[in-house]
Image (tube, rainbow over all chains, first blue to last red; front, top):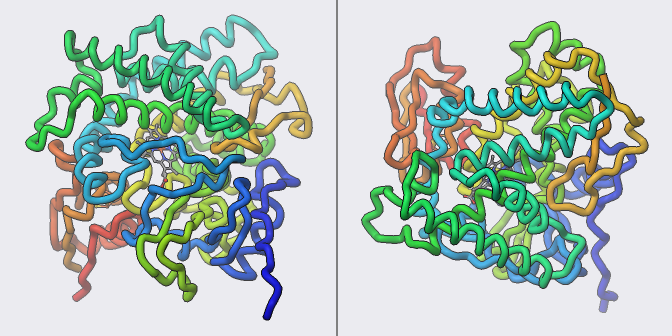
Amino acid sequence: MTEPTTAPAVPKARSCPFLPPDDIAGVRSAAPVSRATFTSGDEAWLVTGYEQVRAVLRDPSFSVQVPHALHTQDGVVTQKPGRGSLLWQDEPDHTTDRKLLAKEFTVRRMQALRPNIQRIVDDHLDAIEAQGGPVDLVKTFANPVPSMVISDLFGVPVERRAEFQEIAEAMMRVDQDAAATEAAGMRLGGLLYQLVQERRANPGDDLISALITTEDPDGAVDDMFLMNAAGTLLIAAHDTTACMIGLGAALLLDRPDQLALLREDPELIGNAVEELLRYLTIGQFGGERVATQDVEIGGVRIGKGEQVVAHVLAADFDPAFVDEPERFDITRRPAPHLAFGFGPHQCIGQQLARIELQIVFSTLFRRFPTLRLAKPVEELRFRNDMVFYGVHELPVTW
Amino acid sequence: MKITIDRDRCVGAGQCVRAADEVFDQDDLDGCVVLLVSRPSERLSAEVRDAERFCPSGAIEIHDA
Ligand code: HEM
Ligand code: SF4
């Protein structure tokens, strides 16, 4: 008989804050599908190869309704797969509900938000300029801009926006127990309920009102649906975009040669944002799934009921996907990176996120041509234990 | 090159429109893909191949010949 062996811990330590965990490339090249022990103490499959991660995320044999939350200390799943919540739903309900929401996020609709986003960005940069350096770019810019954009989209009254942001952040922490996450969820629920009631009484041209009045033959769009959808959108849109702004600015400021390329040719912004998304792939722990039947991924048999982590960050550094993955190069031709996931759950807000990031970085570096870090990168604190990776603060001056 | 789409698989991610907006559009009613031309000219073939590669749901199929 062979001794039962414990699978190695999933690599997390980064010696360069802008690169994936040091040991993940070794895990991928040894076996793109392997066993690992996760934060919760559970063993599960760790998928790190680009093609294998895509295969998991698009395969309907995998469900998002996992029994254990592998990336938390206590492993307790706090999310419930209610109608409209998307992230926690499987087909066929996921498909139906996603279509109800997707029409509000088409490329065309998102393009129409450009002037509004530009105004929000300009207003924040005006305030920063008036205040004078050094400032914390996370607090003054990266956090409030996405918060304002999504609040506008939802029609959240100005006086309740700070509270929305605070709760959304509390929901995403992993350094707390399930009870604390649940408490934040309750507060969020209360706020969203209020918002839905207000929009029912007094519809506007916002997203919630559009959903309330949407054509819905099955009658799925009730209060619960609206709160679930709004809750998912808020959580999924705030922290993610804020992290990309803070971390992306830090990386660009750390790479003056790349920033110079962007300044010489502002048309590069589209490519630059795609490379930032790939290089930073902020969903640092990857997507969790569970097999609903026996399935084969990259020649490895995964049994029914077994959990899988699709490590999108490792996949986006697979040399089978991009040449010299560790070279940050904003002139690369965009390729289908996995920063927004893949398959039926691929980010519904990605076109909005792209537009926001394009406007943010073009405007920031145009308005402040001498912008620089006010603290060396080595002294910055990174979000090593949060679902979405980023910087806690980014002191800059000009 | 001939293109077919499967609207049931489409998840309205809009990657196809970003890659090839002369060939694909999104329906205002459900965000799903609409094919503007099923036999695009040679000029657009690289864009169409990108759309297929970027599509997260396998809703776009290209038939050569
Ligand atoms: C740079 C910013 C963003 C990043 C990196 C990001 C990343 C992701 C990822 C990786 C997923 C897939 C999760 C999975 O497969 O389990 C996802 C899903 C989702 N995202 Fe984003 N996101 C961003 C911005 C946004 C924005 C701005 C919105 C909304 C306005 C949004 C709304 C959503 C929603 C609703 C889902 C769930 C879709 C589904 O399950 O069908 N995201 N996002
Ligand atoms: S890229 Fe694919 S999933 Fe997205 S809208 Fe086009 S066909 Fe649909």
